[in-house]
Image (cartoon, rainbow, N blue to C red):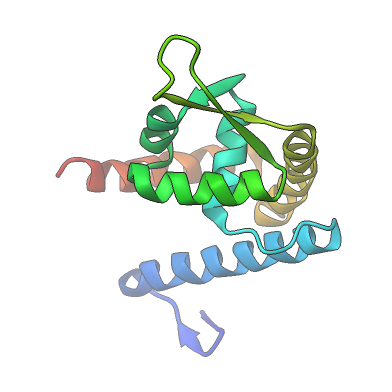
Amino acid sequence: MVKYGMEFDVNNSISLLSHIHSESADFLQKKLSQNGFTNFASSHGNILFQLSRAESLKMNELSKIINRDKSTTTVLVRKLEKEGFVKISSSKEDGRIKIVSLTEQGKKYNQTTKEISKELLERFYCGFSDEEKKQFLNLLVRISGNFSEE
Protein backbone atom coordinates (compact mmCIF):
# COMPACT_ATOMS: atom_id res chain seq x y z
CA MET A 1 0.00 0.00 0.00
CA VAL A 2 1.43 3.39 -0.98
CA LYS A 3 -0.05 6.64 0.30
CA TYR A 4 1.40 9.99 1.30
CA GLY A 5 4.65 9.18 -0.51
CA MET A 6 5.46 6.27 1.78
CA GLU A 7 4.98 2.53 1.51
CA PHE A 8 3.33 1.20 4.63
CA ASP A 9 4.38 -2.08 6.14
CA VAL A 10 4.74 -3.33 9.70
CA ASN A 11 8.10 -1.61 10.07
CA ASN A 12 6.73 1.88 9.72
CA SER A 13 3.57 1.54 11.81
CA ILE A 14 4.77 4.28 14.14
CA SER A 15 5.15 6.67 11.20
CA LEU A 16 1.58 5.90 10.19
CA LEU A 17 0.34 6.45 13.75
CA SER A 18 2.20 9.76 13.81
CA HIS A 19 0.61 10.76 10.50
CA ILE A 20 -2.88 9.87 11.80
CA HIS A 21 -2.21 11.84 14.98
CA SER A 22 -1.15 14.86 12.95
CA GLU A 23 -4.16 14.63 10.62
CA SER A 24 -6.60 14.28 13.52
CA ALA A 25 -4.98 17.23 15.36
CA ASP A 26 -5.28 19.36 12.20
CA PHE A 27 -8.95 18.33 11.86
CA LEU A 28 -9.61 19.28 15.48
CA GLN A 29 -7.80 22.64 15.21
CA LYS A 30 -9.70 23.53 12.03
CA LYS A 31 -13.06 22.68 13.61
CA LEU A 32 -12.22 24.55 16.82
CA SER A 33 -11.24 27.64 14.81
CA GLN A 34 -14.49 27.43 12.86
CA ASN A 35 -16.30 27.51 16.21
CA GLY A 36 -14.37 30.52 17.51
CA PHE A 37 -11.81 28.68 19.64
CA THR A 38 -8.33 29.60 18.43
CA ASN A 39 -4.84 29.24 19.90
CA PHE A 40 -5.56 26.04 21.80
CA ALA A 41 -2.87 23.49 22.48
CA SER A 42 -3.96 19.90 22.98
CA SER A 43 -2.91 20.13 26.63
CA HIS A 44 -5.34 23.03 27.13
CA GLY A 45 -8.13 20.90 25.70
CA ASN A 46 -7.13 18.00 27.92
CA ILE A 47 -7.33 20.20 31.01
CA LEU A 48 -10.81 21.41 30.06
CA PHE A 49 -11.90 17.85 29.32
CA GLN A 50 -10.61 16.58 32.68
CA LEU A 51 -12.43 19.40 34.45
CA SER A 52 -15.64 18.38 32.69
CA ARG A 53 -15.36 15.02 34.43
CA ALA A 54 -15.09 16.56 37.92
CA GLU A 55 -16.72 19.58 39.50
CA SER A 56 -13.27 20.93 40.31
CA LEU A 57 -9.73 19.65 40.80
CA LYS A 58 -6.81 20.60 42.97
CA MET A 59 -3.89 21.83 40.88
CA ASN A 60 -1.69 18.89 41.97
CA GLU A 61 -4.45 16.38 41.09
CA LEU A 62 -4.81 17.96 37.67
CA SER A 63 -1.04 17.75 37.14
CA LYS A 64 -1.09 14.01 37.77
CA ILE A 65 -4.11 13.40 35.55
CA ILE A 66 -2.65 15.27 32.56
CA ASN A 67 0.85 13.89 33.18
CA ARG A 68 2.58 17.28 33.46
CA ASP A 69 4.68 18.74 36.23
CA LYS A 70 3.09 21.29 38.56
CA SER A 71 4.83 24.32 37.05
CA THR A 72 3.77 23.40 33.50
CA THR A 73 0.22 22.76 34.66
CA THR A 74 0.17 26.13 36.42
CA VAL A 75 1.26 27.93 33.24
CA LEU A 76 -1.37 26.11 31.16
CA VAL A 77 -4.14 26.76 33.70
CA ARG A 78 -3.21 30.44 34.06
CA LYS A 79 -3.55 30.89 30.30
CA LEU A 80 -6.98 29.25 30.43
CA GLU A 81 -7.91 31.51 33.34
CA LYS A 82 -6.76 34.60 31.43
CA GLU A 83 -8.89 33.51 28.45
CA GLY A 84 -11.92 32.98 30.71
CA PHE A 85 -12.22 29.18 30.47
CA VAL A 86 -11.39 28.32 34.09
CA LYS A 87 -11.28 29.96 37.46
CA ILE A 88 -8.68 29.37 40.14
CA SER A 89 -9.58 29.66 43.79
CA SER A 90 -7.91 28.82 47.07
CA SER A 91 -9.01 25.86 49.15
CA LYS A 92 -11.13 26.78 52.16
CA GLU A 93 -9.19 24.26 54.27
CA ASP A 94 -5.71 25.34 53.14
CA GLY A 95 -5.20 28.60 51.28
CA ARG A 96 -1.99 27.29 49.68
CA ILE A 97 -3.95 24.68 47.73
CA LYS A 98 -5.33 25.97 44.44
CA ILE A 99 -8.63 24.64 43.07
CA VAL A 100 -9.39 24.79 39.35
CA SER A 101 -12.94 24.74 37.95
CA LEU A 102 -14.68 25.44 34.66
CA THR A 103 -16.41 28.69 33.84
CA GLU A 104 -19.45 28.87 31.55
CA GLN A 105 -17.08 29.53 28.64
CA GLY A 106 -15.12 26.40 29.56
CA LYS A 107 -18.34 24.39 29.63
CA LYS A 108 -19.26 25.78 26.20
CA TYR A 109 -15.86 24.73 24.87
CA ASN A 110 -16.41 21.19 26.17
CA GLN A 111 -19.82 20.98 24.56
CA THR A 112 -18.32 22.10 21.24
CA THR A 113 -15.47 19.60 21.46
CA LYS A 114 -17.92 16.83 22.30
CA GLU A 115 -19.70 17.50 19.01
CA ILE A 116 -16.42 17.79 17.09
CA SER A 117 -15.14 14.56 18.65
CA LYS A 118 -18.22 12.74 17.43
CA GLU A 119 -17.52 13.98 13.90
CA LEU A 120 -13.83 13.07 14.21
CA LEU A 121 -14.67 9.53 15.36
CA GLU A 122 -17.11 9.10 12.50
CA ARG A 123 -14.34 9.98 10.06
CA PHE A 124 -11.76 7.90 11.95
CA TYR A 125 -13.88 4.75 11.88
CA CYS A 126 -15.51 5.28 8.47
CA GLY A 127 -16.10 1.86 6.90
CA PHE A 128 -15.27 -0.10 10.07
CA SER A 129 -17.66 -2.66 11.54
CA ASP A 130 -18.30 -2.66 15.29
CA GLU A 131 -16.18 -5.81 15.57
CA GLU A 132 -13.27 -4.15 13.73
CA LYS A 133 -13.49 -1.14 16.06
CA LYS A 134 -13.27 -3.44 19.09
CA GLN A 135 -10.33 -5.36 17.60
CA PHE A 136 -8.53 -2.11 16.82
CA LEU A 137 -9.05 -0.80 20.34
CA ASN A 138 -7.79 -4.07 21.85
CA LEU A 139 -4.64 -3.86 19.73
CA LEU A 140 -4.02 -0.26 20.76
CA VAL A 141 -4.46 -1.19 24.43
CA ARG A 142 -1.89 -3.96 24.01
CA ILE A 143 0.56 -1.57 22.36
CA SER A 144 0.03 0.99 25.10
CA GLY A 145 0.63 -1.74 27.69
CA ASN A 146 3.97 -2.56 26.05
CA PHE A 147 5.16 0.94 26.99
CA SER A 148 3.62 0.88 30.46
CA GLU A 149 5.68 -2.10 31.56
CA GLU A 150 8.92 -0.13 31.93
